[in-house]
Image (cartoon, one colour):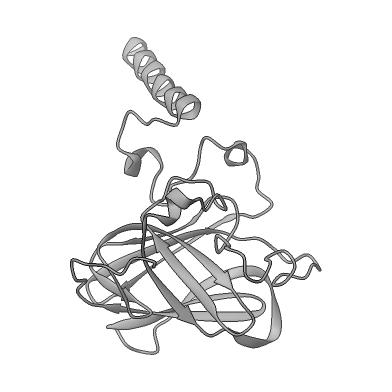
Amino acid sequence: MKRPALLAGVLAAAIAATFVITGVSLIPLSLALGPCLKDWTSPVSYRPRMSPLGSLRFGVSDAELSLCYGRPSRRDRPVFGGLVPCGSLWRLGANEPTHLSVTRDITLAGAPLRAGRYSLCALPRPDSWTVYVSRSTLHWGNDISPEVRSQEVGQVVVPPERLPEPVETLTVRVEDHGSSDQAELVFEWERTRIALNVARGGAPSNLGVRP
């Protein structure tokens, strides 16, 4: 009994070591990294995080969605215009990119998305936010390079709303407003709130690409 267990342990260690050293997984990434695509090549994945990993799952009609994101805290620092410069791309979280997984075709704030895995980033401005959706999911969080941007499949512009009370830690939640056919994906931090409508819908073959 001990020998098979030892061999299995050695094989698992070899697979893990290969991925950590080379970044190349010998098993499907959906299994190697899990639903949140946690980056085991980063040292922060092996110790407690200043910005813990958050996740949520929800359904819209027959589509199942999951969102994974790092949750930074304000800690008496100015956020938008400070930690997050206005007019600069931001990963919508901390550490790894913010990941969105969907099992059916949906629309996100009106932009059609096919079933699959995506990363989200945003360009915050005082009067409008642009949220970009990319098929790149294995880059480091704020390494939003031209290669990452070349994989964008859509973008949406939403107005920011001012909250009456500050939110200490970046929080993402779902508001369904009593409908099973659509919901709002809400991001809140400091005194800023943005909401992205999520609805079940088909995506045409020619998805919008960033101009």
